[in-house]
Image (cartoon, rainbow over all chains, first blue to last red; front, side, top):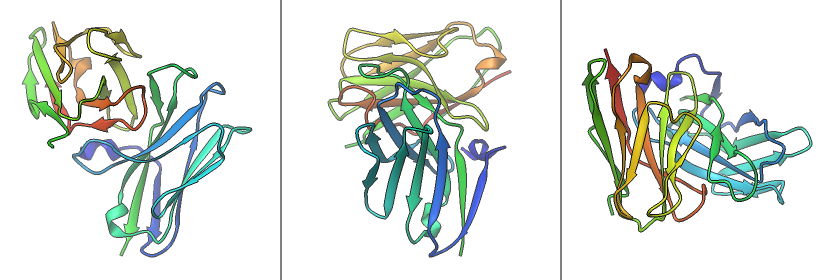
Length: 114
Length: 112
């Protein structure tokens, strides 16, 4: 809950601006990547996912970009709203196809300034 | 549909006490997971059940046991709680594989 945001990188954006949240992953064998949003006191909520055979995927107001060369994932949120304030986690499949395990990044706290 | 439910929401234990965290899902999912979340950190997988009748260790299984009671329910047991197990525990479920996991609201556990 409230403790999730402690010691996390924080991104502050003005309402209406676009947000970009970055994530570096460690496993070059990973074939599946996912972004979660976690509001204070709640469980993580799925936002969008992408497989390694793609480099971009779009959802409603969100876009995920994957750069396998540098093992980097980003989440872009268009026209950021106060309701987007939360901690955002990236995760990746731990050890390639067939694995049931995800490895989670430490998270980024997004604060939207009204 | 309630989705994923967890009980209890909060618990305080003394060192050495035992307890079971309950998780149930009503989405007919095959796979279920238990994670812990510590301040400033991402989630770490404790155990998972790929399908009814199977369980496997995750990244941090020591000090925990699990039971996949049926397709709907997956419980996590702490046999002898330690202060290092103070954390927020989340249960999640998926149709199959690690994709698009649906999370419960969490159990906040404090061990003194």
